[in-house]
Length: 552
Image (cartoon, rainbow, N blue to C red):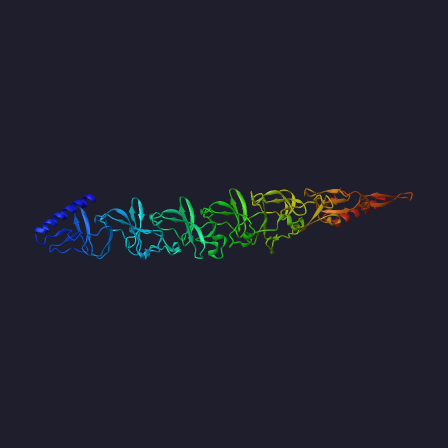
């Protein structure tokens, strides 16, 4: 460039010589000590471009050749900006850093970057930034304001100007153009520390599409096969979220509205999550650092208030979406956890005295509600249990039995196992009971109590395995007490001692010589067909009467 201008200088000198001998010659002249361009009248041209030797040169308002300066050209309807180098030649297809003026002293940039295109004019943009306004230079995209300044940082698409002094510009801006000494348009992921509306400092992730526009107010953006949620201000949401809001900003959240995004922001789908709930969702659990298992379906939505089959096993989720273990009931369509097993006793199941753990007024109705049991190892299992299950209650370990298909607790006589079950509890005397035999008290075919001793009379007798005892004319228990049981298992008579048993069956026999002797009737198979204690007692008395009649 320098050599070219020296050639131009030589030409100007030649023109000067010509001007000295020929009146009113036009062209380059430096007789004043500055290079000027004279018109045909010998007047210096001002505020104009002149082309010479392959370069454009600008004559300023004084008529002198402009050098090392930014030229503001208002000769057309649109103001354009150019730069001339130390030789005065217009530069093209290049970047140029130019000092800021005093009006821009509060900006972060130390100087302005311009890019001068093929025609030498600086790239500029009007008030709105459209995709077509973005300029691709060496494979990167850049934006410029209406004065040709390269833009940087957060830029609003509807008001194209620097926002260095606006700490919250990130909330409404659509583009980010990196630092003042870089300025290329951001695409893809970017992590940035910003100031919130509450004047707090937060470090957020943002995502910009290939057109440079920030993703915002989007609750289901797929990026590299993973779904993310973005708030209205564009920052990626993490942990618990409601569509495009944090739980706090969403106000009252329902389980159906919740998504879980973890710390990496990726929406969880078809996945279990072990987490403490959001502070603004379940405050007590949050304050107690109470972890729960949660499950999100293939749409990323939280499963709640249902028993859900997941990978061939079934799990219970309450109205808030927490997986529940232990005894769980469907009470009028609501899945609720009942009291913990170690807070319950056998009597609670015999009498149906069961209620929701967190709401004692919500009681279980054995005639219309359904009871289930889920593995109590919450951290590693929690699945529905079926068939026989041993459960530790607060008074002993007991066997329970649940439907092998749907897991529902049986209540009443179960023909499959031939035992009585009360709300899942297999009814049977335990080692701690008064006897190794007890009787079930039934009301509308439901077990309401387990009784012992003399209270067993008139009720169905069972042993320690829960099996019904039948057709016994003299059954002895561990206390040396005796029972008479009919063909259906009903206790026809109970005697605390063998002597009492004998006395019941005895009668006085008078010999021919006048002496008396005690004899006993036998409990026959016919007697064991009696359907009630009264009928049995009548049959025994008939046998005694018959025996007495026969002696005569």
